[in-house]
Figure 1 (cartoon, protein in one colour):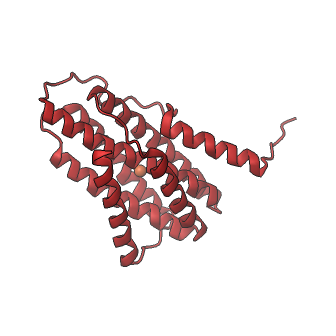
Figure 2 (cartoon, protein in one colour; figure 1 turned 90 degrees about the vertical axis):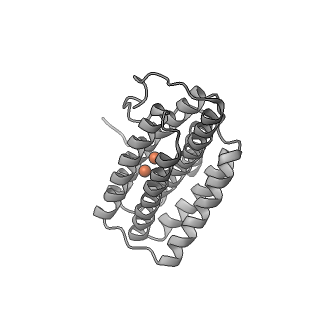
Length: 215
Ligand SMILES: [Fe+2]
Ligand SMILES: [Fe+2]
C-alpha cells in the first residue's frame, strides 16, 4: 500500500536549507540537458577579454542563484498545484543555467560571487513575499523578472567578447529559456505589475549586477 508522507515544518525547513546549500555550493541536478558550450572548442581570448567574460558570467551565475531562490520560495508559498508544478519545472531549467554558468566561470579561471549566500537569502525573501501576494501577482512577478532577464542577457550578448563563442552559446540558450518562462507565467494568468514596482525591480537588479561584476 502506498502511503503519502506528511512533512513536518522542520522537514520543510531542512529541505529548503538543503536546496539553498546545493544552489550555492553544490552541483544541482537540473534537467540533464547538455551544456550548449560542451562540444565547442575553446578560442584564444586575451587576458582582458577573459576577465570581462568571467565577470559577466559571474553576474549571470548570481542571476541564476537568485532565480533558484525566487522559484523555490514561490513554489513553497503558491496556493495552486499547477502553478507550483510550473515553478518547479522552471527551477529545474534554471539549475541547468546555474551549472552551465559555473562551468564557464571555471573554464575562464574566474570565481563565483562571494556574496551568493546573501543574494540567495534576499531573493528567497522577495520570492516568498510575491508568493504570499497570491498566484496572479506571483506569476506577474515571474513574468516581469524573466522579461528583464531577457533584456539583461541581450545586453551581455552585446558586451561579451566576439570570440568568446562558448559563453555566447550559454547566454543564448538561457535567453531563449527565460523567454519561455515569461510566456509560461503569462499563460498561467500573470497580472501586469504596477510600473513603479517594475522600476524598483530594475533598480534591485542593477545593484546586484554592478556588485557581482566585481565581488
Ligand atoms: Fe535562468
Ligand atoms: Fe528563467
